[in-house]
Length: 247
Image (tube, rainbow, N blue to C red):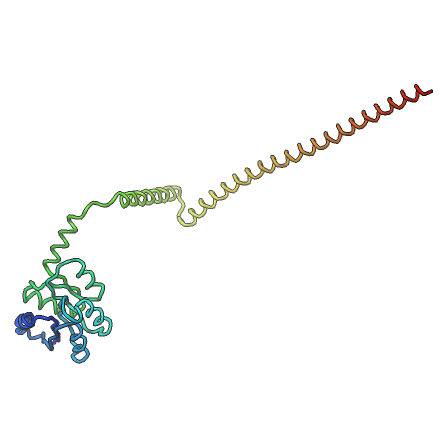
């Protein structure tokens, strides 16, 4: 026997659902509530298997009550029964843990079937809503250019990897992972060799600059000595000339 609590602020809805389910031997309505707050209080006592929950009600709406019920009463499943067919209510109902979302235009047989399936843990969506969202998916806009470019890049990388794999297989190499590592290591060694050559070339330039600097310093010292020698010779000549004059 599946015990059901009906939560709706309209007594007419209570009577309608009671009419729908009274002939079903395996389903029993154990109570009625007029709002979400009243429903939570009754669940504590009745422990129903399924709650048929309206959305718009005073004191506490059905979506807020659903969140509390699914968190505090884990054995009770909530099946939304509402006139609202918008995505916002459906999305929030799912986020809050509802196990189904039906419109009040649902037939008695559809309601009975939904209660059975929800009690077993299967999600149920109204036939009208299912058709509506399927049509929306079919009419969905084509993917954006950004998504298209990303897919192209993924496809290119996938083809490149497959090509590399084929080349490795053709070469008779069996262990793809080891050979990939070997190829990557070879590329790294090649790059390191290029860097070392660059460093060696740079070091050669530095050494050449040091050598030229040392040669320049030596030339300056040599020129300074020659200049000093010339000055000394000139001074001696002047002294000798002056000595000759006085004698």
